[in-house]
Amino acid sequence: MAGRDSLYHPVSIGNLRIDGNLFLAPVAGYSDRAFRFLCREGGADFSYTEMVSAEALARGSEKTALLLKRAHNEAAYGVQLFGGNPEVMALGARLVCERYSPSLIDINAGCPVQKIVKTGAGSALTREPRRLFEVTRAVVRAVSPLPVTVKIRSGWDASSLTWKEALAAAVEAGAAAVTVHPRTRAQGYEGPSDWGILAGAVELAAGRIPLFGSGDVFSPEDARRMLSETGVDAVFFARGALGNPFVFEETRSLLAHGSWEPVPAERRIQAGLRELDFLIEDKGEYTACREMRKRFCAYTRGMKDAAGLRRAVVAAETPEDYRRIFSAL
Image 1 (cartoon, rainbow, N blue to C red):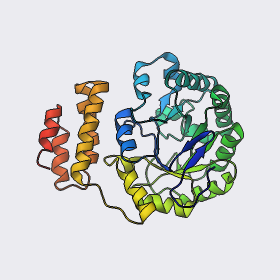
Image 2: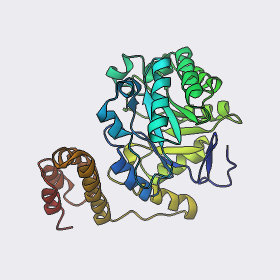
Image 3: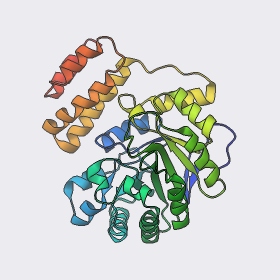
Image 4: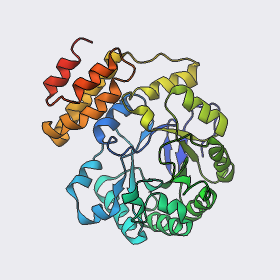
């Protein structure tokens, strides 16, 4: 782990050194290379693909291949895989390394969605630390010396908090870092996350691996508070980055200078229009314009007449529709 003289500092993950500790989390349905490009441009120190199925990789899914494409400004990036079978996860990780040369592989042991959990992946791995150990060890052996990291939840529900056992299993299996989302699988993404668990995880991981925090980081102040109160080595922005890929540079300003200024609405919308253009390159106009409806709903958050703008964007069908909607800004 890198030494720390301030809240904003470099991070070392195995043999990978990252210049800062403000990361873009894997966000299903959003973290394609178009959005990752904007977040890296907006100050994210490191970024991850959304979670990718190891089974789909083994089958050669074209849709999965699109998720793995590196953004043009990603000198380094992480690929997050999910699956519950050690052999299939190892195969998927090897295929990713051969075809895309990522900087690390991250194992998703936190997703609470039923269709993921029922396959033995996601939060099911936090619930079963022994299997998490087997999956992690298989992936570590498959891609060494590339770093392997693991993202876990606090547990299955309030009566089954297994984060200590899951953290120990990941470390024993050779994980180079662990991210903790301190909500249970039963909570999903609702209710407050328990940052006390983050502080406890930092104590358990001390001197062995970096410990990263995720959950309820929506603003620069949230990131500063998580870093200062829990001692995590890095913070992940997930939903907090949606509609504002500049939250990373805003946070860096707060950590380094003690203050920050919000990016003007016009700049955010211009970022959204660029994201649309990038998506059109990858997915075609029809699909991109429909996917950007939900994304522009996030970009309009906090703007004047945001409700009216959202009503307009959910009916947009062409790039011209979007540009007309925002032409008055």
